[in-house]
Amino acid sequence: LCAAAEPSVSYQELKDLKKDNVLHIDVRERWEIDRFGKIPDSINIPLGELMEALQMDPTDFKEQYNQKMPSKSDPVVFSCLAGTRSKQALGFAMSLGFS
Image 1 (spheres, one colour):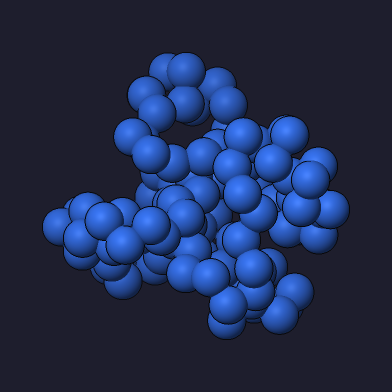
Image 2 (tube, rainbow, N blue to C red; image 1 turned 60 degrees about the horizontal axis):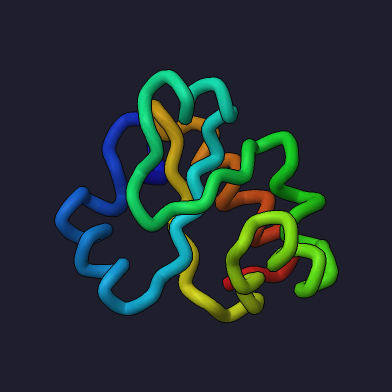
């Protein structure tokens, strides 16, 4: 779900990761969610909002996204439609100190 040419996480791997409470952030735009559907157990944070969201106060994050804010060491998976934005999202998160 991270590289455009070839996913770094397969669908089955993602399903397995979600059993371990991995936070799945879908970085598609809201209109894409409305048109193509929401991925179960994911939260939608459009790529344009991601940097700000990952720097929010945890209380504000919980209020805005109805999800506990990930710590910098929590496992997070980013997804989008083709993989380009999820790769950017990964870069943003890593630049903020997420491992």
